[in-house]
Image: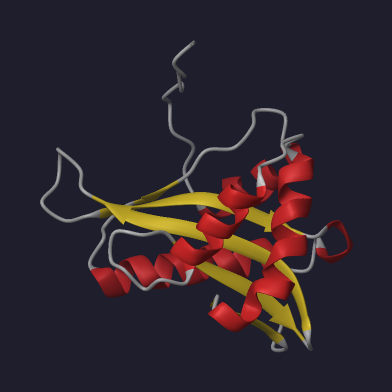
Length: 150
């Protein structure tokens, strides 16, 4: 990780920096969310409540270059909680500079601090650039995800 790249927890004062990175992530996945979801998500990320998601922004200088959202949850195969890394994004102009690796490493440290022995996440099958990073720092699961059809 570059010495001037600092992943740190998202605070209520970070909303103006978080929103454009979050919205770029949503655009990457061709998704739009209503304002009430954006506001609720940010409130949850900064609540500090144990059951709510947590978030980190990766900062270089005064600029937020990437984000990660993660949460701890119960698991029926373990006594300890495990960690789900729900969202991870690096701004296009910052890719290839260690942002994603720094954010994932920070989540790994948070999981270790919480006593969570597992961290897992999903990505799109065609997300080749991100998968190249993930293949270096994690093991690909053999499981296939299914979603309910309404």
